[in-house]
Amino acid sequence: MARAAVEPGLRPLAWEMRGRVALALAFVLLAALPFVLPLLGAQAVVGLATRMLIYAIAAASLNLILGYAGLVSFGHAAYYGVGAYVVGILYAHWASDEPLLGLVPGTDQFLLAVPAAVIVSGLAALVLGALSLRTSGVQFIMITLAFAQMLFFLFVSLDHYGGDDGLIMRRPNALLGLNLRDDATMYLVALGALALYLLLLSRIVRSRFGRVLSGIRQDERRVIALGIEPYPYKLAAFVIAGMGAGLAGALMANMTRFVSPDMLHWTKSGEFMIMVILGGVGSLFGPVLGAACLIGLEYVLAGLTEDWQFYLGPLLVLVVLFARGGLSGLLGRRAGVGGSDG
Amino acid sequence: MAEPVLRIEGLVKRFGGLLATNELSLDVGPGEIHALIGPNGAGKSTAIAQIAGELPSDSGRILFEGRDLAGLSGAARARLGLGRTFQVPRLLEDDTALDNVALAIQARQGHSFRFWADARRDAGLRGPAMAALERAALADRAETRVADLSHGEHKQLELAVALALGPRMLLLDEPMAGLGATESRQMTAILQGLKGQVAMLLVEHDMDAVFALADRVTVLVYGRAIATGLPEEIRADPEVRAAYLTEGDA
Ligand SMILES: Nc1ncnc2c1ncn2[C@@H]1O[C@H](COP(=O)(O)OP(=O)(O)OP(=O)(O)O)[C@@H](O)[C@H]1O
Ligand SMILES: [Mg+2]
Image 1 (cartoon, each protein chain N blue to C red):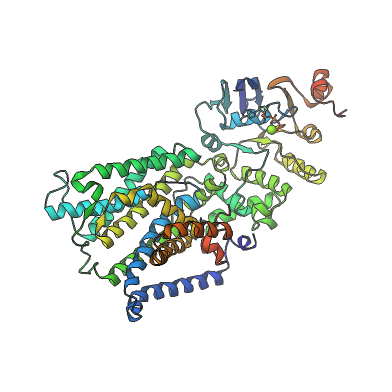
Image 2: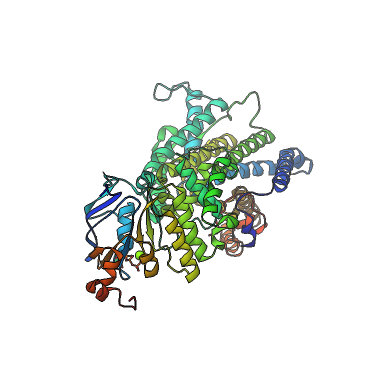
């Protein structure tokens, strides 16, 4: 309660400045990481860190609807997977030199494939969101899950694109002469994408649109009594979140040069939810922490024991029980605004 | 008599076998305060929810400024100028008092598909919101989280939020409920000050307030209006006294 007391309203300018300096510093340190780690003989960790950054984008996008708008979507991996498949499928058509459906030429260009992935996953979110958002509560959770599983089985059945086995890209996308195969380069691209997406989210949650989302989470009937129809705002948030997940999927496709239906599986949606809850629902940087911790924990535990999943469960339960507001709440200073306390 | 602001004809609401609203008809003239009284469970809140568009009606018509509200969502009715307060305050508890009023101002200014500028630094929202809080005598609580406000302040803020929408009619569901004697008198004075400017349908158990404020009173029992009239007539009506005013309201 005490920590939340300063949260609403305007924060003093001095705090704001200090926060910005701290952020800039953190960004510089993170940007230096791929050059420092090899000096410490920890080259392999760069790839791990890249995965954390990419998952952080997916988790942060889910947090916009889950944490700020209170929409418990259990199918967020669908948009992540669609983003990845757009990159993979465009690459496959470029490699085979056959236009998609005889119309759309393939591409291996990052600056074409990734925006296309973001747009297509946004469209998928628009269609599925338009239908799911007619429901609420448990029904909403179940219908988002059902739609995501439908997409999962759709990609499993697409034998042309590898079906169950997925799709291998021989090379990552070409980006302005950069070599995305290089760990440090891929890391920096992911870091840049995360920074941009977080900047966008930080503006959105403070904007008029963000105020409406927060109102919808807190009391939808109150918002209606103000003359605001919640549905279009929820749908817009759902689409923005879907686009973020699509961006993460497109980056992951480039990093692993592999896409498969597993990326859309409901367990992946569950992982995203765990990242958000672990890091702190409704705080801007919580999902970044949550993604880093979950991926890091998986990595460490997997190195220690084969039954790592067995130990991961209780660890997560401990965090949820003892750190209200997740890890970012535990650290005592929540970077987001309008965080939920419930 | 001038065209009523609100006119209800034969309104019905059934919850399974329960007739919560039973052929209710009433009207509220321009600037008039029409009190709706009745024992607990009489269906007062249900009637308000039907008028506000939160509950669909089984039959009957609701006309607001001559316009049939059938098929209009709750939000659309609010935008037409039909404001309401809730019996149990519904406010954004995590936000400050100022934030709550600012969201009402924001809603009044049109759509909120604005994604970039900081709403909490928007003078076009904060200014009018602060003015609304001042009118409700809540200015010194502007930066307090709603969850930390007293019950009386919740009730005051509910009214301030409704007024910030610039309504042409207010549906007030027990604005005095849970208030102490002093707070009740304050709230009565505030409503007295609004009298004549906004039409009001006032649901209230506090008979002092009702008889001080109301131009007309309708008595609801088991969803049915058993009497409508001037406050003095209602006070004298034997049927009303038997059904409702027995608790020493002489
Ligand atoms: N959603 C609902 N489902 C079923 N029954 C309901 C529902 N809402 C209200 N009721 C019933 O309808 C009747 C009228 O309730 P309502 O809340 O309108 O009464 P009220 O006059 O506002 O009472 P109070 O003075 O206690 O606020 C009550 O018997 C109540 O139990
Ligand atoms: Mg009631």
